[in-house]
Image (cartoon, rainbow, N blue to C red; front, side):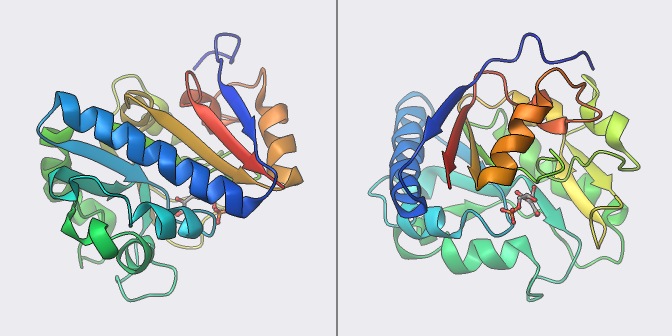
Length: 231
Ligand SMILES: O=C(O)[C@H](O)[C@@H](O)[C@H](O)[C@H](O)COP(=O)(O)O
């Protein structure tokens, strides 16, 4: 994939993480409301990891028609849903509660030993709900997003313009096999947000400028996104 000369995004800086969480949750809720004005259902994809919990805590109380919202993860660690590193667990504990308990979850995990064994089944549930109406992504200091890691075994496939919806992924930076939505599908989301905290990630985003997506996978999904940052 080419360098990022054509990548343009909005960088929004917040006074602190709490304000970011509340403001971003409001923006996601407004985005979903707008999407539901045009379509019967809206798909919201969100990351796991440590950053989005407080956003979920706020978003789950939004007064929107959650019964028409499909929620899925941008990527999942291939671990049982009760494992402490399971992103599905985080989703069930922090987002699919309160008013958002009405939403439907599109699973990104099935109890099979390898992601490859469940790929077709998981993909068949997601496909009818595309494009993603609203996307929230995280980013690592190595410039990965979702589970599209530099140096991963299926990196080229995940970045390909002809990529399938889901790609299984194994990477040096990831302790367990992963499953990720491909860059093509993430980038095709109608409204895109990226959440990052701290100086190291801000520096990583700067460093990504000019690098090919194979080295800085975040570049594959940044165009037209809003990046939300707090120290
Ligand atoms: O399962 C995951 O790990 C993710 O979805 C991943 O892409 C995450 O968003 C980044 O690694 C940032 O993670 P933190 O928010 O924990 O820094």
